[in-house]
Amino acid sequence: MSQTQVNAPDRLADIRARISRAERRFEPRLAAGVKLVAVSKTFDAQAIIPFLEAGQRVFGENRVQEAKGKWPELRARFAGIELHLIGPLQTNKAREAVAVFDVIETLDRDNLAAVLAAEMARANKRLPCFVQVNIGEEPQKSGVAPAEAALFVDRCRTVHGLDVVGLMCIPPDGVPPGPFFAQMANLGRRAGVSRLSMGMSGDFETAIAMGATEVRVGSALFGTRPPLA
Ligand SMILES: *Cc1c(COP(=O)(O)O)cnc(C)c1O
Image 1 (cartoon, rainbow, N blue to C red):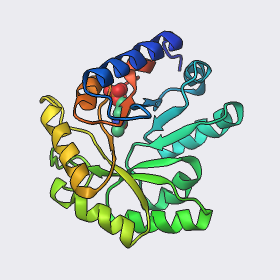
Image 2 (cartoon, rainbow, N blue to C red):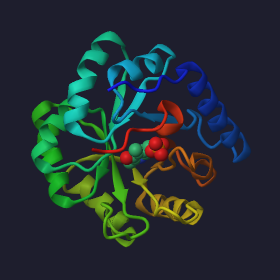
Image 3 (cartoon, rainbow, N blue to C red):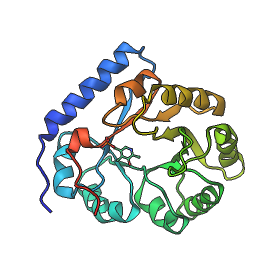
C-alpha cells in the first residue's frame, strides 16, 4: 500500500521543539530530557527510513509479528536503534518479543512476568520493562488496576527479577487526560519507579507537564494511519 509521504526532518524537528518547550515550561526535571518514542506501527520500512536518516533512533511497535518483519533489516542498516513494545503481549510470543525488542512497555500480569523472566534468562538479556496501568479502569483496556500497581512492580522485581524502570498508561478517550497523568505520577512515586511512559500525539505536552519521561508519538510524526483492516 502506498503511504502518504511526510517530511520526516520537519516533523521530527517540530515534535522535538514542542517537547523541549514543554520541558522548559514545566521545570527541567530530567538531565537526559524526555525520550521521544516514534510509534511506527502500520508504517512500512519506506516510511520509517527518512526518520532514521533524520536521526531518530527510538521507535515503538505494537505487534510482535509486524516488528519482526520490519526491524531486523533496519537494524542492519542503522546503528543504535532502541525498539519499544507498546502493544499487548501474549505469553506464546514472549520469546520472539525478547529477540526483537529492547524495552517492554506492556508488562501487565503475573504469568507474563514469569514467562518474560524465563525468556530473558534463556536469551541472556535483561530488558527494561514498564508496568502498564489501566489508569481509567476501563474493561476493554489492559493494564493492572491503579491500586495494584505498586504491589505488582514489587512482585516483578523481587519474585521474577525483572528490571522494572517505569509505569505506562493509555488514558481514556474523550475526557481530559491531565488528572490521569497526575495520578500516574503519584503511582510512580509510590511504586518506586523513576520513569513514566505517557502522552501520545494529541496530549504529549500535557503528559510532560505531569511528569512523563517518555512520550509515544505516532500520527503527529508519520501521518494518519490507514484504518485497521
Ligand atoms: C498507536 C499508539 C500510540 C501513538 O498514537 P498517536 O495518537 O498516533 O500518537 C501511542 N501509544 C500506544 C500504546 C499506541 O498503541
